[in-house]
Image 1 (spheres, rainbow, N blue to C red):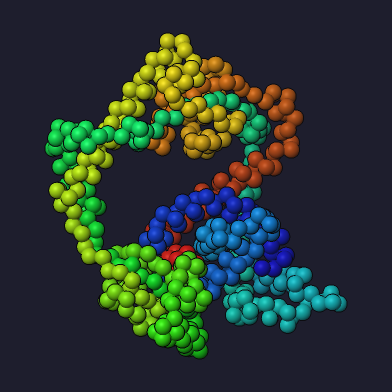
Image 2: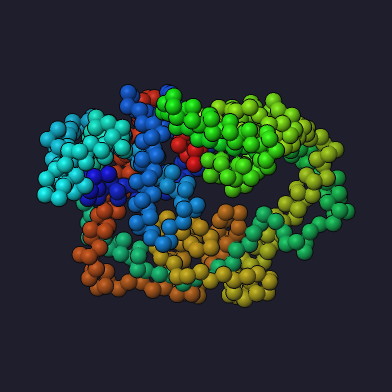
Length: 508
């Protein structure tokens, strides 16, 4: 992207940083599409008549990865960053379109002179004599966007979004009290220890005997039969296949020559396998599916509905050990071989009863154990004993996390999000134990406060000037993120905004 524009993206960049957590939760949980509609054709993102393709995603992804590399340096992990980079790049594509549309609705606009000035002032297009170099600009635009017109449209949308961000940010202010509150969030500390009791399972040493499981099953047969009825569908196994594949990628906007080249390379790979070369070795050398190439193309075991429709159609039509013809999917050309076919397995009461009875009996035993253990801890603490001593007597581990801060997300090391526990850690006096039990991700947790380190009023006031801008930026980002999310949902609900997350995120 242009240097001059990049320097002017302060608010836009801050917004992306603030919203990336939401993006991950959303995209990793949907398994494909985004919102109520999917774009037409090969578009990744579509807003009214505007369509952004895989080429736009690839460009945005490369830009995002380059930024991350600059920030992390040697700490950058290519494999670990793949999903992060994909999600953030797709988020930026969506947000840029949404911001630009919102800016137009509010009457904001970008003039031709503004675009021309920013382009002509960009250091990337200035020659040795300090003059604008039209050839350098044209080469950049055609290489990255296909045409100058496509670049100008994209750049104009980004400028519109930046203007809107600046308008929204200018409407936000912070008071001294807000600055002081954030200072306390960052400086105040509470030191605790806690005891966490896992109620999902009993220790291995307390595993029930076969006789105990059978006795429980007989006594609770009606409940067990009801559980079987509720879970029979999930206890059954549909028809499945175990397969390998090799992929030669093909962009959705590929021309005829690119299509023919990809097909020829896939056919050459198939011929090598058909002539006796090991499928796994050929896939490792030639497959362009980064997720499976290192595994020799192994797709694992999958049922209908678990994989790409074209791959599934081919896989379930092949016999074991059979090599497919070329299979065309949205990602390119595949060569597929089915290693094993696994027939449907329908769960019956007799076949499921032993394992289901043990699972439910041990779950009931674990629940009884945690109830009894929790009651004994509370009783000892209520009687004036310390939580640490009570835990020692029960053989429980006492955890001592790093000092806690007043984080608005309630995060506690070792426990995750626990806002009620965090509030109690600052409300209880040193030496006090929590009067009750906190339910946190399937565990019952009790705490005791060791001590507090609270920032003095003079220290808080002294830092007010230095922290004001930081707090203002945080508040602006929160406000902009909320506003942008609401506007995006409006566009989705009316069907104007459509995103094919699978085409982008599923292709890497």
